[in-house]
Every structure is written in structure tokens, then in C-alpha cells.
Length: 157
Image (cartoon, rainbow, N blue to C red):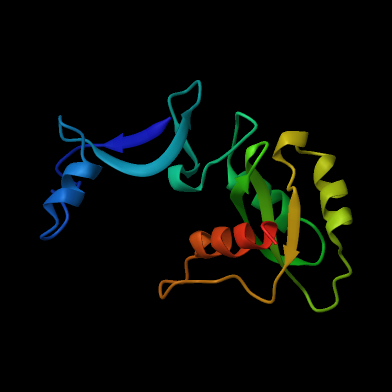
């Protein structure tokens, strides 16, 4: 579920942004981190992804990080990013962008065939794109919104 935190170590709100503060904090003072977590039997929380990155396809929740880790383990893959793009039948389609090593000989069919060995069918990418690099912000974080826009538009052509 959604992770919320409260305590003296949590910031009190956004500087000069009361509307954003109200939006991100619950009425009883918990901060909505934007992370999604699972609690194991021992009470430990594992972060499984970001709420804004969650893909809902055919009614199933797909956490991009799981698919990214599987893709990144494939020989020849430097890095990947997985996003959901609008799809008329499924709501969102799982879409992958891969950066390959120069000597890699991977195609979309091979990537999907390899993933199929370890990942449920509904989590498999409907589209695989090969890119020179992933778009990043000034902090070096992959800009998934840019990928969603880019590949969402590609699907409409």
C-alpha cells in the first residue's frame, strides 16, 4: 500500500506552498511519500515502486521496477525504463525503453521471450524501444513522464 510517515524527523511542509503541503499531508499529519510498499511477515517494509509510476493494465497492477530489474539482467542491456502508456483495451500498456551496449544483438522479440521465462504475461512489455540514452533531469533521475509522452505518441501514429 501507500507509504505514509510522521514524526519529528519529517519536514513540516513545502516552503511557501500551502496548497501542495495540504495535498501531500493527511489531516492527521502523515506525509504521503509517493512510494508503494509491502510489509513482510516480520514487519519489514519493502518499497516496490512509486505510486505515480504504477502501471494498471487490464486491471492488474504492474510495478515497473520488477520488469526493469529483469530487463537489466539480460546480456547486453546497459539500463532500462518501463512505463505505462495509454491503451484502448488494457487502460495502459507496459512499455520498455532499453539502452544496449554497442555490441549487443538484442531485438524486441528476444527481450520479450527472455522475460516470459520469469514474468507473468500481463507484465510483459507490449512494446520495446531501443534508445541511445534515457532522458534524465538535473539530478540524474530518469524522466518517466518524458518516456510516457514519447511512446504514448508513438502508439497513436
